[in-house]
Length: 121
Image (cartoon, rainbow, N blue to C red; front, side, top):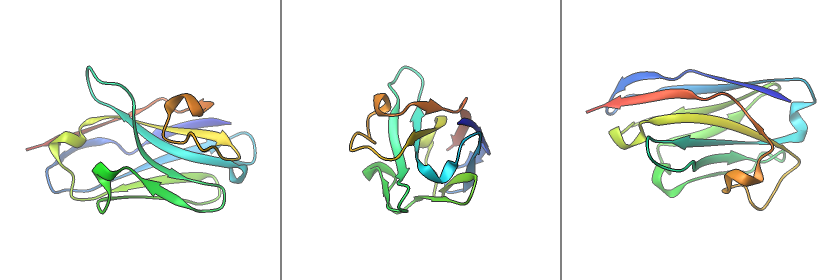
């Protein structure tokens, strides 16, 4: 499966952005999808996950502000009440089926190219 992330940009604190991850190739519905982010000088951090069953989970740092959803060939990350500390490159990832390691970047086999999100104070 090939992934293309989009929707990043510059937004003021308190604003919203919606990231999209478009998939092509194999049957996307058979893949779980995750969103990760990486700030300068830091490791790749788990943000959100949606299983093939539709079950979702989000990191504590974004709980109540971010949500993940999916349609046939797209997965989206809705980000509200953005904070400067949300500034990072955001990546979508996919894995056939599901994994208990969904918070671990090493548990994902397919990655999009990343989209920059910058939140100004």
